[in-house]
Image (cartoon, rainbow over all chains, first blue to last red; front, side):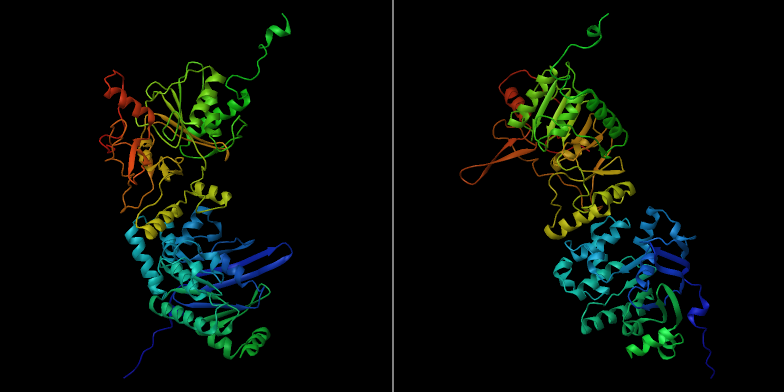
Length: 265
Length: 304
C-alpha cells in the first residue's frame, strides 16, 4: 500500500495577510524599517523580539490602529482589495470590528471594565449591526463558552474578575464574530505560570477547532514555541529571521536569534 | 439732519434682552440645527440673569424667537405655576412685551422643562426644551472629541450596549428620562429629560422643537414631520411609563402622565402632570365652556 501525502497547506494556499515595505518612525526613533510579513490561512505566526523591537507597533498596524509612513497591507478576503492602510476611518472601523480580533496585554485597553462581561462581547456584535437582544445574549454566551469562561459569571464586570478571566473575556470578544485574523499582543504576560498554561491551552484548542489565523506577539519564547507554526524574529525595527518554529528554535541562523534561543533554553 | 435723528433713542437694553449679534448667531445656529435634525450645533451661550443649569439655553432661544405679538407659555415639569416657570415667564414678558398665557392652544411659543404638553401642538407653534446634558454618548464615551467622531460615523452601537446592560441587570430597560432617540434615521439625540411617555409625541410631530443647552452650549432641533425613533432592540419593544390606567385625584382626568403624591397612610394619589390640562378638565367638569384640544394619548394609549 502506498501512502500519498498532500502538499503542505502553506504551499497550496495563497497568503491571507501580506505586509510589504512597512516603515514607521516616531520623530528620530525608527520603529519599523522595511518590514515584510506573510501569514497563511489557518497558521499561527509568532513574532518575537526584545522590548522596543517594533513587534507591538507592527501588531497595532495590523489592527489598523496606526498608519505607517510607507508600506502596504492586504488581506485576502472576498470583498476586500487594495492597500488597507488607505481605507478611510469608517471602512477601517467596520473592517476591524468584523474581520480582525485583538487581545491586548492590558485588559483595560480592550474591555469596558464597568460593563458586564457578556456586554463586552455583545458590543462587538452591536458595532457590526446586530440589534436583537436574544441573539446578542446567545452569541455572547457561546463566545464566552468557547473561550472557557465560567458561565455563571457571565454578567460580572471584568473589573471584578482575575487577570486570566479578563483575558478570556477579551478572547471571547475577539472571536465573537469569527474574525479572519486574530491578533494577540502578549496575551499571557502578567499572568502566573499555571493560569498562563490554561489560557495557552484555550488558545491552542481554539486554533485546532476553528483554524483561526493568528498572529501572536510575545517576548516569551515558551509561549511562541507552544503556539506558533512559524516564527519571525525582530530586532530594532527590522526582521532578522523568519522560519518554521522548529527550525528557528533548533537551528537558528542569525547571531541575534542564536543568542535569544540560547538565553532562554 | 442731525446725528441724533439717525440713531435709535437710548434704551437700557436691547429688545428681548440679548444684543443683536447674539440673536443673529442663535438664529443662524437654529437654522443649521433644523437643516440637520438632531445634530448638535455649538453656539456661544450668553449670560442671562439666571444661573446656568436653570434653563438658560431655552431662555436664550425664547428671547431670540420672541416678538410683541407672540403669546408665551412656560412650563416646568408640566406645571405653569412653579417658581422657575413663573419667573422665566415674567422675565420674558418684561423684556419683550409679549403677552403670557397658560393655555397650550393659545401659546405660540412654549418653553418647557422636562415635559411636552398633553394637547397636540400645531404647525404654528414652537416648543423650546431646556437641556441639561445634550450629549447622548457621554455615558458610553467620556471623551467628547471621540464622541463627535462617533456622531460623524453614526457609530451608535454602544448606545444599545447601555440598554443591553440595563436589561441584563434589571430585566428591563431602566432609562426613564432622556431616552436616546434616533432623529431622521441619522443622529441620535437625547430629547432632554422628558419622560419616555413624551418621546412618541416628537415622532412626526407637526410643531418645531428646538432643544438648547445653555451650560453645554449646544442647540439641536426636531423639525416638523421628522422621524424620532427611540432606540430599541428588535425583540424588546419600547414601553412608556404605565400611567395609562391612572386617574387624577383632583380633576378626574384619566390616561395621562401623572405626578405621584405620597399620602400619609403610605398609599399614593396621582395628579395630572400637565397642570393646565388638569385645570381645563376641572373647569369642563364644572360646566364652563372652554376649549380643550385633542390630546396625543387617547385612553392612555398613543395611536400608532
